[in-house]
Length: 416
Image 1 (cartoon, rainbow, N blue to C red):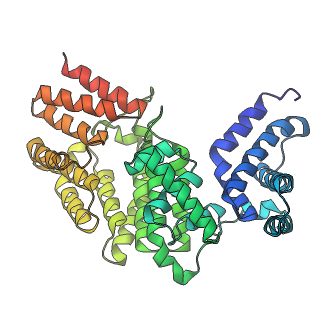
Image 2 (tube, rainbow, N blue to C red):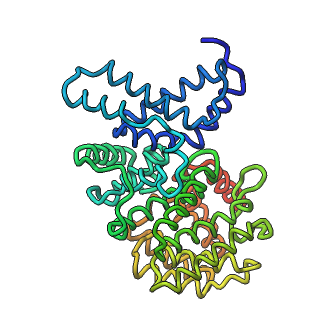
Image 3 (cartoon, rainbow, N blue to C red):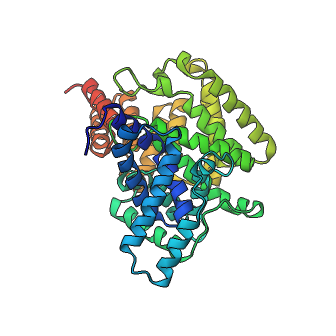
């Protein structure tokens, strides 16, 4: 292999990190097969490393990658095929696909990534399988990261993804955005997918960074596309929620990548344009019909965004919104967030009683943030030994490096 100019691996690596799933989604459209598209995508990026330094960087790198991946897939089918009727038909279909990848990539509403999400969220799959499949295939999250988001073991999640892919293949689920009359029934799973993708980007479940801006940005982009496609009040609410959360990103970590809690953030660093857009969307969502879970969460985020100082936060209203949210969407994590709001509104003892009840039921016993919240309330009450035990439990469960550093600092502050 000839010497590769230094900037080529950097460029290819950046495109892979930020745009490879779009290439993958378009290849699925062309090849009609998840595994074949995955192999073709990797073959295309390998070819880019080998050829761009010698032949020059193409004017449309994504189109080049899609076109190259498509031809690599045709070659792979020909090499591995026994040329039975089904495999021969696959070759004909692949070769017959128009090669103009630029036209396919540059679409707006008919975005290939959105098509892929709707395919992975088909009602033939269970709700958990839809979400897990999309996080794996659309966002390229590891099985371990997805398992963490679902609070299940990696082996359980791996089996779920394998079964979901098999179901898509066996049921011949089409790679398309549903017809307009089908969209409302398909919306719930898609919203859940986008929100979980955003959450993984906003607060990574593991790794060296608090956030993954590529994932949260992609979730917001998909939210905007969906809002144009189907301006339902919950779509509006979800988009507003993501924007309000994302507005705080610049203030959430220090220059060294350490976590800064909401109450300690420099609010002048919050993105005011993003906040204004988010507040407008939340208001619009509330006007449409009785608020759903995403709109209620967006309203909570709006109250935080509107508070010019931490002590100006309307914790009473936030507690009421969490109670409404809990009624329509029972969840131990929502219950935990409500308990924290109660602690801020009525005092640490009241919040601690709520958290104790959640953990005593066995809910969230392996969720490090529950133990972190409990530890902080113990600390405020002066119960140092219990605070230390809870911080140590949280440290044992935390997977994210900045979170572990934060907990270790908290333990250090308690003394020996």
